[in-house]
Image 1 (cartoon, rainbow, N blue to C red):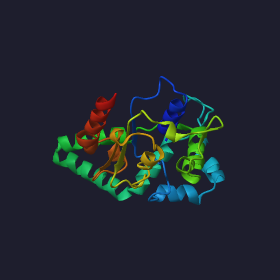
Image 2 (image 1 turned 90 degrees about the vertical axis):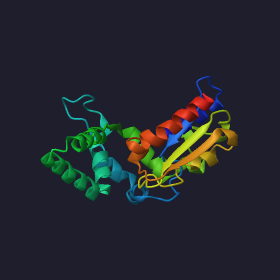
Image 3 (image 1 turned 120 degrees about the vertical axis):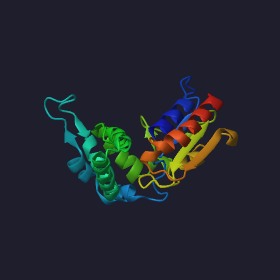
Image 4 (image 1 turned 60 degrees about the vertical axis):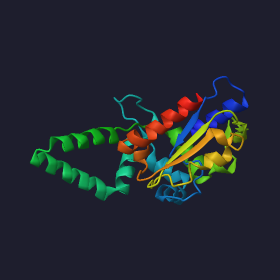
Length: 228
């Protein structure tokens, strides 16, 4: 979402720093398209709930102490809770692999979870504004989003080729939510657009893992090299 807005602002300003290409992956550009449990959750709770429950203060002795943040462990807990059975199965298989001496499979498990469990805290302001403006109000899709008080004009993007990528099995960012950027950026020529739905990929699989390595990364690389 932020990348799309930044590109539109720079294009409007005729900035020399406007990206040569733009790739959007599993991002909630239009949250009204195929709403997921995440979309429904954000609408169900008032902003006061998110401020009181999801925001915490970094404790004394930790980098950034005193800052208000949305803790990474809460985001991780949310992800895991959506697929608890699958994660439990992976851990059972892992210990079975260790018992049977199947080190290669065990190493794959370790590598996956070393990355999956690595999370960062988000500044409270960023998190709360995203919940309110992107998820609740759907301001990007409605053309109501602003930057420094000025409306963001996505039609100003004319010369930046656009690639949108979605996962067919994404249960966090539903199909069509990212593709919506193609409809907002009306002045990008058809020859400079591409939309891709990766079959068999969930939300995490769009950014990491075998599906990403075999299909998505080469797609992005080819797109960038073609236009950059």
